[in-house]
Amino acid sequence: MQSQKNIPLALTSIHIIFILLFLLILLISCFLFNKAFAASPAFDQNFITDDKISNQRNDWVQTFGNDSSHLRSDYTNLLAVDYLSDGKTLDTTFWLASNLENASTYSQPLKRVGYGMLIAIASLPPTSGYNGANYNFYIEAVDGKWSEYLYQLSSTGSSALIESKINYTESFNGTTIGPGYVKLRLDLNSIKYPTAYGLSFYTAESYKSNEVRDFTSWIAIPPATIDILTHPANIVVRQGEKYLIPAEVNTPFSNNVTTITFDNGTDFSSNGLHISTPRIQPPLFNVEVSPQTPIGVYTIPFVTSMIIATTYSTSPTTTPATAIVDTVTKVLDPEFQVSKKYPTIGYITSQGNLTIDVIPPLTVNETFTAFWVTYGTPLVGLTGVIVGAFSTFFIDHLKNRREHK
Image 1: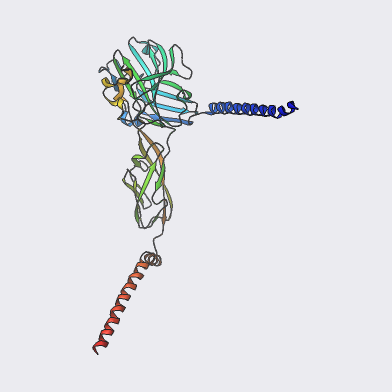
Image 2 (image 1 turned 60 degrees about the vertical axis):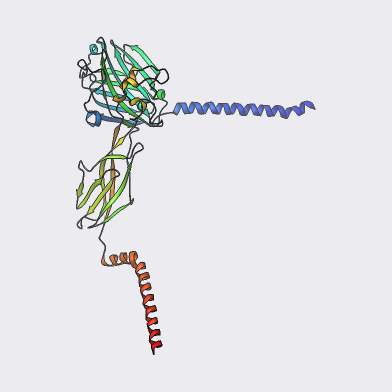
């Protein structure tokens, strides 16, 4: 009889163990699933040239010392960069002014040559990291041997080594050096698969205590698209009329518009439809429609450039180089001596569309109807007041006459 009483307890214990095992398996599966499918945004190949690097166009930055006589070679003269990602890795190609591969360039005594990128994580505060850059990934040649480094950067002046591959004599996995180009591959798992981030590519060349670098401005990842919202949302203009249309132009990274161009010009004019931008920030469109403009819906493409600040120019690391000391260890990190030399801004350039519906002018009846809708009620009220006042005056006048009789 006692054993029969224990049967439900035993079954209950088995059920609890089964449930716990099931939950454990479910948690492990979820973890493995998330790890297997974790990824940053994937995007197709993008290309930027040195002509579009606005604040660093063909410009060398002296990051150490004051002598560049043995520097600024074609092997670090950055002409263009293209980059793409499958969400797991970021593949970048640096296009250089050199057109021949010369191993001796990378093995000169007292000389270092490097290629890398600064990475700013959008979800972190702009005051974090080094001028807002949270990671520094680069390869570097010293005495003919290549090494690869990934550092996490701190606003305190410290840097933590995340990964390194030292003294490679052959090409890295996914990273190659060829005639006129260098290919870099970053495993995005090493920076925790960010969903949005900024990049600034650079080359570096040093000799003894002197160094120069060639930077790109910051770019947005994923490549930003532009949304336009006008007030009103639907632009309807009659023939022979003109309107000022306020607008909002936004991206996930910025709403600070710097330029708006129509077909490479500041104005648009076609079939008597003329559009200009008397104000850029915030955008204001002046739309003029001539009486001869054909009736219809017009979609006018325009190109706008917007400034993005993926870094923060007033962070503690923008003070003079001699003041950049780790607030914890009190040690000066040489990498942070270039603090105020890093670019802190970039630009997004993208296309948008302005849609305008041109309709006929008002007819006489429509004009009267519109006038009556707008002013009819006030006029009726005013007329009633006047009639009421006049009636009161007339009645008083009649009473006075009777009294005098």
